[in-house]
Length: 365
Image 1: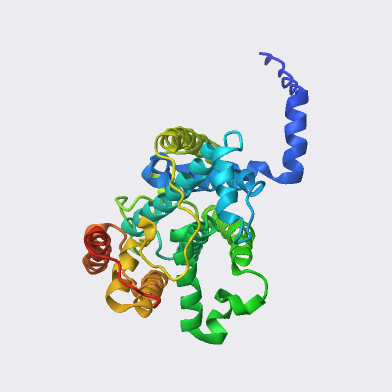
Image 2: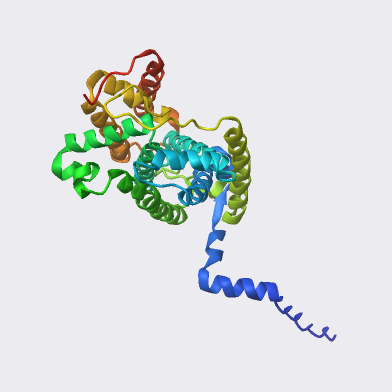
């Protein structure tokens, strides 16, 4: 009995020109490295807040570049240049409003992202470094909001600058010299804050963001805390479906488009106000809402309260992965750290809600 002759393997189809171009680009840039697996739970909004924050940052940078073309960081002209952007530059008022609201969105989404990371215990081993990077970016975003407030150079901005100078002088020559006008006299301090706002702070945020993304790729997105653990307490995302990171990126892009649409509507309906030229020696404005809890502490304890409350808050955040050594990540199995967090958040909310009912005190007299 004779056997049938073996069939020759089918020829491999030649790659298309598009595929050859993509392969050539990938060979040089390593784009296929983005195809690492992402667990299904990471495509929800709660687990995509880091990506949504990145979209807010992109909007902020693009609108900031446009505004920088018309802004003058000279004290005598700063306020007028912002007003000129709003009234004389085509689309300038919308761009400024979009810039303002994207900054608020960046702060909120980063804060919510860190709450999610805390709630799911995603800062635990081996992801401690990424938590520290996230806390550092939150601090830089806080500084960006502060310097942005100063740049509009109305009464609110000028009083923010006075707090900047007061903080520098309180910290002393070594720690606070950069924050005082004497550091680079006779150059106006507004110019140095402008350079910090448009170059130093965004550059540091982008550098940390790149490192943050590399560490996420190295350690992978943390498993969902509800997944069962092995005897050593470790969890694995292999128990749920995964998809390439490119799919996750498309989901973030969809969230980002929705965010841009929402911010665009808010920018049209609620443009940020701009006061007139500041008057030196007065102090009657309240800071932006992101600083209200600190403002209440400052009302009670003066400038030292402002400095030490922020310092305590960020030291606590930085120390969290090293204080919470409980390997459990599910929130119900971490009662102590959850109670402490609720106390901190409740305190910040109460301090924030008190601001409209408390008359501002003189902090810099």
